[in-house]
Amino acid sequence: MNFEDIQAVKNLLSEPQKIVIIPHKNPDGDAIGSTLALWHYLKYRGHEATVIVPNDYPKFLKWMSGNDQILNFERENSQAKSKIEAATLIFTLDFNHLGRIGQMEEPLGKLTVPFVMIDHHQEPSDYAEIMYSDVTMSSTCEMVYNFIEYLGDAESITPEMASCLYTGIMTDTGSFKFSSTTAKTHRVAAQLIEKGAESTEIHHRVFDTNTPGRLHLLGTALNNMVILKDYQTAYITLSQEELDAHKYQKGDTEGFVNYGLTLEGIIFAVIFIENREEGIIKISFRSVGDFSVNEFARRHFEGGGHTNAAGGKSNTSLTETATHFESLLEDYAVELARPSI
Ligand SMILES: [Mn+2]
Image 1 (cartoon, rainbow, N blue to C red):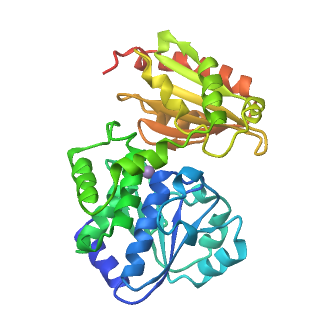
Image 2: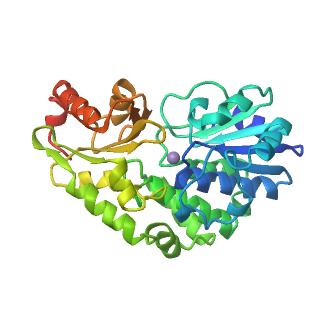
């Protein structure tokens, strides 16, 4: 954030505001952790603040302090709408395009109040008056930590806020292993532990919450894995039938895509998940090294994200999508034949 932006935020926050804080649709650990930490902070600063999520999120994120105060735009629609209409300031966190918030795009598009964006995804659109956008950051939670520090308030970070921020940094860095993890990321994490984040407990709460159904579904996913050695690529398919057979719950397939990358010599991993209700195939892409799944997802599957992690979708069947995907790889033969790190 540059000096002017910091001054502008200080100005905005110098008077009590009615603030709505919004993460992207299908919020993950970074989205929930960053919005709740900022919510605690803004309340501490004397503002009226509300976190409104576009839709529901997995149970393993529902333990964070302030979770019970979050409004779900789908479930508490009229309450959420009136909060949005009354807002004097909007924060959007962990996304950079209003298309990422589903049905909430409509009421937000009508607002004339200032927006503040805090985000680390590529190619931000320009809806926000104040943009703290940095694609080199590990997570929005690391940025919210910086944001509070820029405002001179790092001292005000409570154990609750520290736990929220630690959660998002931990989940968005794949437990501090992705290439976006810097020395600074570790320093921020260390600060958060010093401020009261219980790292062991947070790991346990987020990662050790498997149900038998989820582990069996993982078994099916791994069985379905197709390995394309020539392209150093591995992909997984999961049909709606397979999800139903294992009593699929939201969040159950979280992290499955990463298993492909644990194979020796694999640098590109994908999972295709059928969603019959929405009539689409949801896709997650992961890579190691400089093969950009962001570009791949943008170009072929109506998606995007980061260089090494992106999402997308397809409107054809599961089999057609997988076949189409395989047919695309030829064009990337050179990039996908490079030696991995
Ligand atoms: Mn993030």
